[in-house]
Image (cartoon, rainbow, N blue to C red; front, side, top):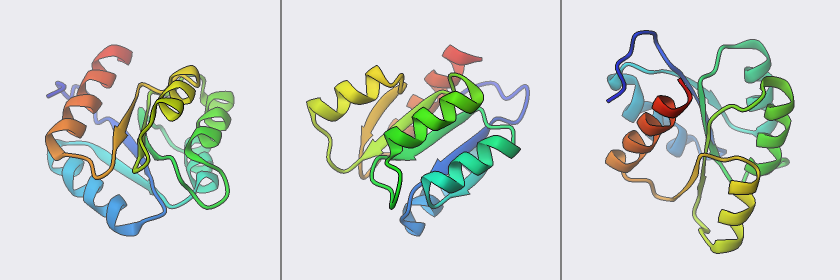
Length: 127
């Protein structure tokens, strides 16, 4: 696990409340501060007003997709490490996500151990 010399803030964006809460329940006991958004627009608002260190972003959101949200967030914050999560995991999505500078793409449902590992690696790389 990342040595938490400061409390890292994770932005969890998913239109499914159960998915958001599941990720919150995974990360808060590990010492992370979680910020929850149910849409791309809400995620953008959070990034504008809060300190966010990493984003976990569902690909399929109501108005703006996870990729579109990542692009807007990049214009605001620069390169925020982002992990895209999608039930539809294919080569085309992977290519688009990596060209948009996503750290990686995880398939839904996410494994607790895998998502903690990937978030840890992303934070170690960026911070």
